[in-house]
Length: 321
Image (cartoon, rainbow, N blue to C red; front, side, top):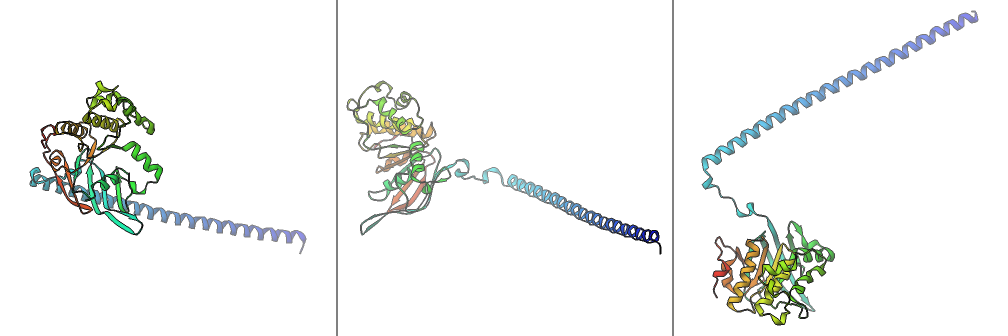
């Protein structure tokens, strides 16, 4: 066989082989396309099923809403009573809170199993005998002391999880405290005592405005020694409210005052709740103060024994004791 013949035969074989490879490739491509079309069909079918299911769900929900509306209409609005907590926000919530003090071998349980909710803008009076745990409860409310167990929420945040720095900021910004014995700096004037809040590194209102809110703008340049007990307590209130806290804590705020002066102080605190929408919590031994509160918390033997809602609190100006 000649070389040309051999080369011709080899060329034919190569052409046939090439055609076979092309045919195989085309067959593979056709198979892939068929698989893709099958997958696309399945996806379209699945999407169609989901759309139909969603349409059915929406239709069922619409029917449910329509049914509920009919039930409400038939029942009448007078038979449906919404809870107060639905209309207001809970600023403070205690969940199974306990506090234990240890001194050497001595263990003292000051609080146990405390569950409590205080709403934004409420005036709350905490009542109870000496040693019941009132002051401990107040200290926990203001982040002045740490709970041994349980959770304390303020504005939705768990303050029991705060580190020292975050807790310090919480006290500086969100909490104002009114003490029984004023704690004014004797060498500073009234307005200078109020202005001290700026040293906490927080924004405060105009100190003169704070004094106006307690009716003592005209005594702004007087020193504590030049003021009566009631006036000094009003200065301490002005100092507490100057930093515009969400929570105002008062520890026996009228304990060192006569009746008339005490009534003036209570009126200021009540106005902070009613007019300025601050949450005011007051610890006292005087059970008559319960009449001006939105909520009364009865503390006994280290726990909350009873919580009383007051639907018609008395005006502080009308309180007599």
